[in-house]
Every structure is written in structure tokens, then in C-alpha cells.
Amino acid sequence: MQALIRTFHPLSKTEEERLKEKLSFLTKEKEVSLRVQIDESLLGGLVIQFESTLIDLSLKEKLKKLKEQFKNYPLDKVDIDEFPDFVKKIVDFYQQKTFVFEIGRIESVKDGVAHILGMQEVRSNEMLEFEGGQEGLVLNLTREGVDALILSGGDHLKEGSLVYQTDKVMRTPVSSNMWGRVLNSLGKPIDGKGMLEEVNFVEIEQPAPALIDRASVQIPFQTGVKMIDALVPIGRGQRELIIGDRQTGKTSLIMDMILSQKENNLNASSDREKIFCIYVAIGQKNGTVARFVKALEEKGALDYTLVVNASASQNAVLQYLAPYTGCAIAEYFRDKGLHVVIFYDDLSKHAVAYREISLLLRRFPGREAYPGDIFFIHSRLLERAAMLCQEKQGGSLTAIPVVETQENDVSAYIPTNIISITDGQIFLDSDLFKKGFRPAVDVRLSVSRVGGAAQIPAMKKLSAPLRLDLSRYWEVMSFSQFSSHMDDSSKKLIDKGNRLREILKQKNEDVLDFPSQVILLFAGLNGFLETLSLEEVPPFQRFILDRIPIGAVSIYKALEKEKDLSDETSQKLKKFLGTLLEEFKKQQGEA
Image (cartoon, rainbow, N blue to C red):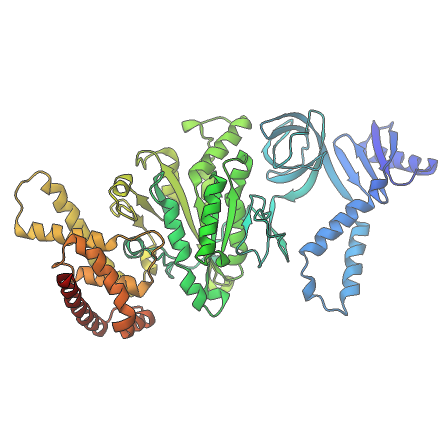
């Protein structure tokens, strides 16, 4: 057996003989020959390479590991008097430690996937280092070796090149100062604002919180959209799917949800009272993401938002990793007791990227050519959303995935998979969108299975009659298509339903706080719109919102403080709306 020895200093005859004896003992080979090379880049020590094993005894590797240890250690917590002992302890540890790695050779490279021979001790999802310094991620374990995804710069890799084990899984940098930044799938900044400061590293694949560590969903996540907060409420720690055809307002709805957190975050006395947002863009155009980021910045919402971008121009590997990177960052802040909402836009493109990877890895295709574990890649991602108990700091991670449908078909493979994983869905209908109904939410197909438990009491009192009136409206409307004559009660139901639908309409980026939503819905449910034509409902709605700071301050504050609609507040609200209706009609008559 021949062993390659790379050394900083030339070896004496005695040192070579001792090395041969050691290697013979390790490998059980009787005859061992050495090929010695001088390598000054090692800075000191030597590197032994034989068969599929690499033993690194160089000063360069020890300094590299020492640097990593200091990078991850909170040095600000070390007392100045204890610092020399602390450094000595780490140095002593690395002086005694031998770094043994497996090595392999590339059999073939194609479309960002390297087939590697050897490396029998490597784990799935472990990072590899190629001969030119490029990084790879192991996804397939075979009898002959492993299949690894090349993360970047694989153009110069060729058959026969060496691959080194790193004994590390995929990690992403995290920092308390990373809000307002745009990162790529590997957690590196791409916004031109410099590197992240005070960086730690976390693994992108983490187990979901245990059942005993979770708390029930009981705190509302206010979206600022009347229709969602009233009829499809979302709680912190929930997983709520946004589903619909392309160009139906899915990303606009995400924008509204992010913007609606601005007022709450400005008034928060600490970070624990704020809601932070992470937007993961998968397979979108760079220009689209840039416009999204610019809109957030102009609206003052980028300060509490983080964007992870894996654009359509990037390879499938980076698009596959993006949501896991975003989720790992979100978990880092959730475990500190903060409330985080993460948006995956969208998981349809993520599934396509994983299908492409799986076909390159020569995995058997299943339905629609997706691999058999396509359900698992999304379930293990979305199961990480949770509301933690107080013993675990009481933070929350709310997941809002997006899925694109074709011709409103929610029964397709990927949509049904994710519907079964999540706690409900917000269905955006393309027909409603074409008719100008914004947001184009079809509340008949939309549901929130756990959000009702977290709904604000005042909104819960209004949502039940609102849902009942709308269901009656749709029932009567379906029968009215077959009849030319309708009785008065049916006409009244249709008129009320039409006005409620008008009050539920909302323009993009026109988010409303909870008390304003309650006042508007109260007006629609208590007959204050009956004497108005459909065309007069939107201006009356704006008229109410303009008058709230003038004539309904006490009502607004009562709703904000009590979170409930008491009899006293209801009477004040009726009197206020009655006065406004008369004033509005008078203005319309004069006009």
C-alpha cells in the first residue's frame, strides 16, 4: 500500500520508518511505501492520505478549527480574568485532537450533481469539500459511494478530482442584526449592504418541536385584511396555506400581512411584543423580488422583515435549500422568545426544483414524475411551525406557504399534499379576481381549523352572523338562477349579501387595524348599509374610517383595550353610525 505524505518540513529516515510502522498497524498491511511531498501551505505538521482516508495533523487545519470555535463562542460572556485560561483550554484541546476525514473521487459530474466513489462513513445532508474549495451537499447514499449536490462553482470539477469529508451538516449564518437584509439560499447577503455582524451558525435541518414543548394556538395573528381576520382567522404558531392560480393576488396578500404589522411593532415596548416577518422567494424573477423589497422599504416595513431569495435564474439546488434556510433563521429567533411569521412563495416551484434534483439523482419517479418523498420534504418543513410553551421562552413560528394551482384545480398532487399538512387554506379564485373582487378570497373553500380559538372576542361575535348571512346569500343566489320570480325575503337576503361583499372588499396595501375592521363589519351586519346603493357602499366605508378619529375615539379605545364588543360599546357604535349615515346621505344629496 502506498500513502501520500504532505509535510511542511522534510522527514528524516527515522520519522519515515515510524510512520510506516504506524500505518502498517492501522491498515493491517505488511508493506507500506511513502510518497513524500513538501507543502509549505500547511504552516506546520503533515497530512497523511491513504486509500479513502485523510488524517490531517497540519497546523493549518488546527488554526481553521480554532477560528471556527472562537466564531461560535460568545466571547462577550467570558470574564477578562478567565480569558487566558479559556484560550489555553481550547488550544490544549486542539493540540491533542487528530482530524481524520474520509476522501473520495468524483466518478462523474452532470447538471450540478457529482457522483462520488468511496466515502462510506459520510452522512446524509453532510457538507463535502471539493478539491478546488467548492462545497457540496450529500443527498444520496449508495453502496459504491454518495451523490452530492454542488452548491456553487462546479464548472471546474472533473472526473477523478478528490472530495473531502467535513463532518459538518448544512448550516446557515444567523445574527440579531440581520433584519432588513436580503440573503441567498446559503444565508449570505446579496443586497450590497456588507456582511452580517455578530454571526452564529445553525443547522438548516432541525427536528420539529416536541408535543410537550408546544402550547395551543391562542394568540391571533392580525393580517389587516377584513375578510381573513373575520372569516379565516390565523393564530400564531399556525400553518395557513394561500392557494390559487397565478396572478390572483397571492404575493399582494403577503405584502398586506407584512405591512399590517408596522403599527404594532412601532408601539411595542420590547422585541417580544413585535412580529417579525421572513419572506422566502422561490423561483421568482430577481426584478419581482427587487420590487417587493423596494415596496417594503418605502412603506417602512423592511426594518422587521428578512428576505431569502432563490431566483429562477439559480439552479434547482439553491431553490430547494431556500425554505429550509429561512425556517432555520426563523427558529433561531422563535427560540429566543420572539414571534416570527415566515412566508414560502411558493412551494409549487420548490416541489419542481426537488423533482429536478431527484431525477438527476436517478431516483424513481412517481405521480407527475415527483419522487416518493415529495410529501415528506414539505411536511418536515411545515411541522416546524409552532407556538412554544412558556418553559421554552413562549416564542412562535407561524408558517404561511403559497401554492399555485392550474385552472382553480385544488385536487392536483402538490396542492392536496400541502392542504393535508396545513391547518387550513385561503383560496384565491381567479373568476372573482377577474370580476374585480379584491382580495379574491373564496370563503366557501377557505377554512382555518385552529385560528378560531385565537380570534379576538369582538371579531368572533361578528364572524358568526357574517358567515351565516353569506351562506344564506350564496344558497339563495344559486336557486335564483333557475327562477324568474323571488319573494321579498329572498330579495332582502340578496341585497344584504351584496352589501356585505362590498364591505369586505379591500384594496392592496390598504390594511386596517382590528378596531376599524370591527366598526365596518358592525355597520354591514346591523342594517346601516340597507338604504345605500351598492355604488355608495365604498365611499360610505371610507367616510366611516375618516370620521373614526374625530367622533369615535372612545369607541376605538374601548375596542382596543377590552378586545370585546360589550352592550355599552354596541349602543355607542349604533348611535355613531346612525349619525354618520344621516350626514353621509345629506352630503350625497347636496352633491
